[in-house]
Length: 154
Image 1 (spheres, rainbow, N blue to C red):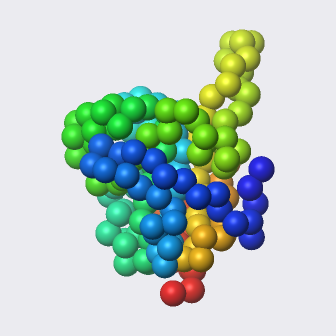
Image 2: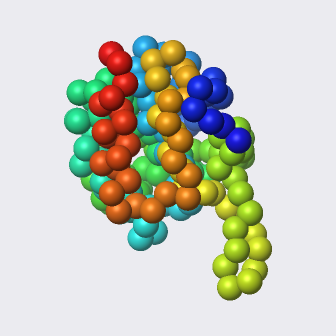
């Protein structure tokens, strides 16, 4: 389980436009958010809210990257359908999801299964985790993450 102050695990993931990796983003703050599935209600709302604030995150020196186990092609369709401006990394093998402790046991109607915990990590310019949000509820979340990103020293 990652906590503030821990070194963020590196990742190198395909996107619908290329690749994205933490090591290549050194020198920038990174908002890395994990979400369960492209084009579902909560995930779409979260992606739209992050996209709406992407310029404010940029002013804070931060890039926003969403990650799920969907394919890069699925991400491309999702981004195009909703005019999303956030980068979406495809972690089909679940290695990054697991490295960040976001692959968890869930329960629905008494049935237990493994799935992605909606979670967000704010990583500073040196690759250190500064904030962690787990079991995220979408309303108000993006504003809280933006405020934390704006609070990081430049």
